[in-house]
Image 1 (spheres, rainbow, N blue to C red):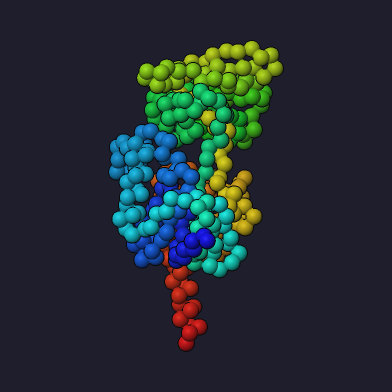
Image 2 (cartoon, rainbow, N blue to C red):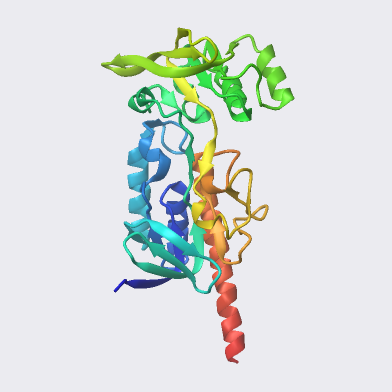
Length: 321
């Protein structure tokens, strides 16, 4: 027989948004229960050096997440190692089913399941991930001051990443598999005017090249889509900018989504299209996608949930009179 658990506030996800929501939820005496998911700590657990977290000149991503988890526990959050596989937002209390078989019911839910960068699927890409291969220029561009980098993609994200990287790199090569970009025209104009950027058309990457000791990228092998001819471009950084996929599968048929699957929230809040359900972090943020903004949204979600639950209690008291 499956176990059933009830909590006033259920937090699904354990990145900066989830753990921060847990800290604020616990401080509000909501006794939150956080389900960590398949990747406890989120994307920062596969990030090496983090230099843009306020208060730390440099901190390792996994270490930061260990500290955030410990903080949430210390405040009184119950953290469960489980993965939510089903979520029913059409009944009250809300009902979530874990991979363990446990059923979690909750008066309010914070969704903090994040988003994952889309990767090319190359074995060499995985080998050098965090050691020259990245999917976030604003996170890692600083490490490539005075060096050459390659960006893969042809949409707004790729062009914006290439432009941003010119602040640090001596040369940025944008590689696109077609002969024209999908990005907005104004972004293309900025790209083509920038003397640091070179565009390589009609090519796809087939292998990331690098050294083993120390582990690091030295170049990328490209293949022409029509002729099959191969060439190597030297670089120290390889940025994959082919988009992100928000982890919104649990709610795709229940909540209002936008911009390719991101959960819509009411402007200036974390309130979703269903009262009592809140979303924070990369699952709703298709613009910034930073640890610090995710943490800020986690704070907002907990405060929004606190106000929602307080209003529910007030209604119950009025009904009892």
